Length: 316
Ligand SMILES: Cc1cc2nc3c(=O)[nH]c(=O)nc-3n(C[C@H](O)[C@H](O)[C@H](O)COP(=O)(O)O)c2cc1C
Image 1 (spheres, rainbow, N blue to C red):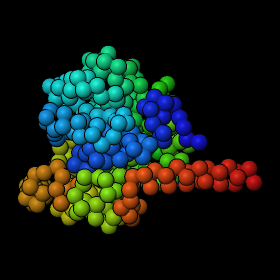
Image 2 (spheres, rainbow, N blue to C red):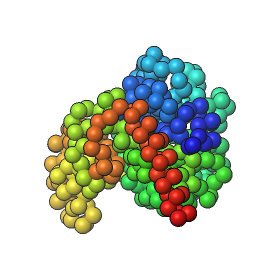
Image 3 (cartoon, rainbow, N blue to C red):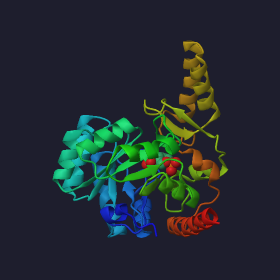
Image 4 (spheres, rainbow, N blue to C red):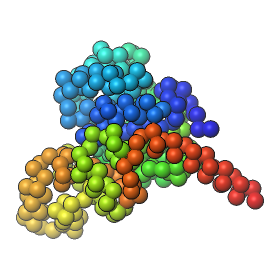
């Protein structure tokens, strides 16, 4: 029922992508997603060239199915070296994280026959990557875990859909059949899930991070630039929330610096630690750790049932 052009483009059964997740989505999760009928995506942010080569080999040992590699364009040398490895190792699909990979990189990847799917936070960005040759676009709202822009999924997706001709995949705030179907109502032809897939036995995220997601309320995340220098949505801690509140209130530079140091001392300056873990606002609706296959099956079956109920109530 939900077989779309995204399934044909990527060679997958369900129009569901697993967003790249540094620290939570290694070869085991990526392979599990592919085996369950979706597209798994390996992260590269934070790893070196050797870890990428190793992760690709390990994923291939787990599954013969196609998977993608995510390149977050954090600098010319980094982006180019990761793109070259994808070409050399015949990775069929590349997603790019927040930030524009640039025409040269897109042309390089496409010249090697790689399908390119950039993640965008705005209409302007979507128009640019389409002009550069993107095969489809992942529009990600600011309720998502990880790097975020400022526009939420509900207004972002239809505006991107209206602005481009290539198919759009919705990301940010999708964790069950209701979100899946809503994305389709907005004009998306597929979805990308992040936070929901951390709460799986296959995710490499530490147990503490999974437990914090299960215990989280919808208000328990915060957007901060303290981790990577760019806004990242992460599970809140007292110290992080205190700092962000002081910053937004415009407290004195000394006070902000004092609170920043309290947070840094706690987290040890790490992007992922028991004190800092990227997660989206859907953390508040995740109450169980479930295998990827079960999550996908439930999502597809419930979306079909919900769609039938909606049609019946509309025609009643
Ligand atoms: C722990 C974590 C790490 C992430 N790391 C990356 C990354 O390395 N590259 C990237 O493009 N997106 C990254 N993201 C964003 C996800 O790929 C995905 O788009 C997002 O989580 C979707 O929103 P959701 O969390 O509401 O499902 C990360 C998200 C999380 C939660």
